[in-house]
Image (cartoon, rainbow, N blue to C red):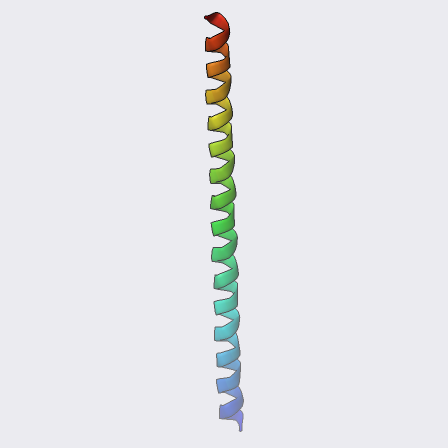
Length: 58
C-alpha cells in the first residue's frame, strides 16, 4: 500500500506541475498579448496624431 500511495503522490505532483506550467504559460501569453495590443494602440495613435499635424500645416 505504501508503494501505491507513493505512486498517487507522484501522479498528483505531476498533475500539479502540469497545472502550474499551463497557468504560467497562459499568464505569459496573456502578458505578451496585452503588451502587443498596447504597443499597437500607441503606434496607431502616434501615426494619427502625426497625420493630423501634417494636415493642419497644409
